Length: 203
Ligand SMILES: Nc1ncnc2c1ncn2[C@@H]1O[C@H](COP(=O)(O)OP(=O)(O)O)[C@@H](O)[C@H]1O
Ligand SMILES: [Mg+2]
Image (cartoon, rainbow, N blue to C red; front, side, top):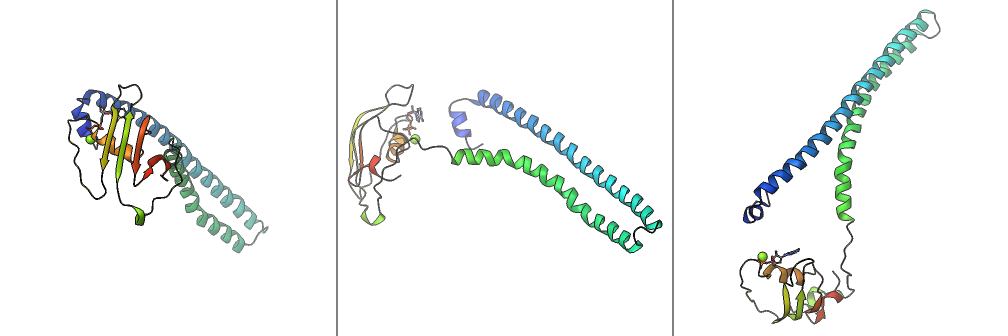
C-alpha cells in the first residue's frame, strides 16, 4: 500500500500482484504448518494431564482405602493437581506463541545486524560548529549496472543560503541528497560539508 505511487508510476501492477500472490501463498503454507504443530501439542498436553489426573484418582483412592496414606493427604494431592492444570495448559499456548514470534524476531535481528558497507570516519560534527556550507567537487556516480548518472558535478551552496534544484523525474535530484547523507559511496570527486570531506565525518 505504501508503495502504490511507485507501483502505478512504473505500471508494475501485474508484477506486484503475482509477487504478492507468491508471498501470500508462502505465508499461508507456513501458517498452516504452525497450526498443525499447535493442534498437535495442545491436545497432547491435555491428554497427559488427563492421564495423570485419572492415575492419581485411581491409585490415590486405592492407597487411601488401604490406609497407606491418610484421606487428608489424598485430598491435598487432588487439590494440588487441580491447581497445576491451568498453568500446564497455558504452557502449550506459550510454546505456540514462542514458535510464531521467533521468525519475526530473527528478521528484525538480521536487519539490525546488516553491516554498514561504508567505512565511517572519526571526526564528529558538533551542532555548535556547524555553519552549513556544502561543496560538491567533480562528483561522479554510477549505480551498478547502470549508465553513469552524475558526471563531474561541481556546486557550492554557501552557508545559510537556500537553493532549489530543478529537473525532470530521474534527473538525480534525490540522489544528490542521498550522496550528501552518505547513502552511497562516491566513485570520484568530493563532497565537503562544513569544511570536512564527508567520508572523514562520523556517520
Ligand atoms: N539505488 C539505486 N540503484 C540504481 N539506480 C538508481 C537508484 N536510485 C536511483 N536510481 C536511478 O537514478 C536516477 C536518478 O534518480 P533520483 O535521484 O531518484 O531522481 P529524481 O529525484 O531527480 O527524480 C533514476 O534514473 C533512478 O532510476
Ligand atoms: Mg526524487
